[in-house]
Image 1 (tube, rainbow, N blue to C red):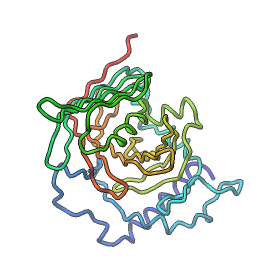
Image 2 (image 1 turned 30 degrees about the horizontal axis):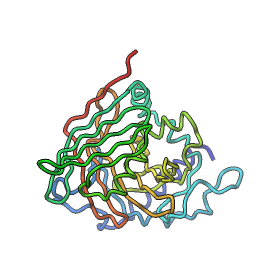
Image 3 (image 1 turned 90 degrees about the vertical axis):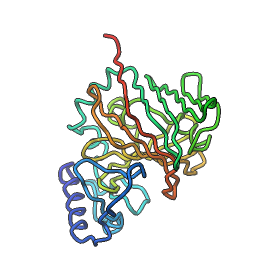
Image 4 (image 1 turned 180 degrees about the vertical axis):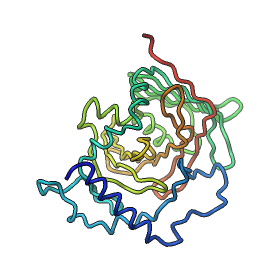
Length: 283
């Protein structure tokens, strides 16, 4: 099955399910700002994820009669040539080429935990370095870093446990899945497609340092990473991370908001950035 036919089939199924969805699919009005809800560009409405169970897995096959990429999650749709779709996103091409020339990205903002708020700085650099400074009081702070010397944490993070914060540091990757796939098309395991609130995503799995793995959800239109599920080496769910409010800054796409949730969907913390600085490599 060609890429265009495979994608067209999945899109047609989604359209039919959207037409038949009930009024319960419509998001509630009057959501307060800062509650961690994702407001995607274009005002796309979420659809009940139960639609995926209507897609018979045995009905979608490759030309060689082998099953298509999918995981065991009932919300996933099997698709063909998923890696090619992710890597060949034309909307992202210019952003990805400019990201390759970036050496550092610095984020300045605030972490919100319930009614509390804490000044936050995040500094990222190639190849996969990250340092985080969270001011938790007048004279107290949490510091975390990832470098070629390993993971280091000092203090107590707010909103997240130390294990969750260590997992975030360990699994950080400076480049996007598209650039990673250009380097090595076997980096990610394709898991099909899944409908998240307001968007259809490509679902990928990747092994990270420290025995961690991630399930990565990539917006099928914009190519943005909109969700990361971090899994421990023992297979335990550690944290869901939802970057959103993507904007163009100095030629690259960066999230101005990140929400952290438990496996049950409880919001643990929200990071909001008011300033992001991009620093390029010297030519």
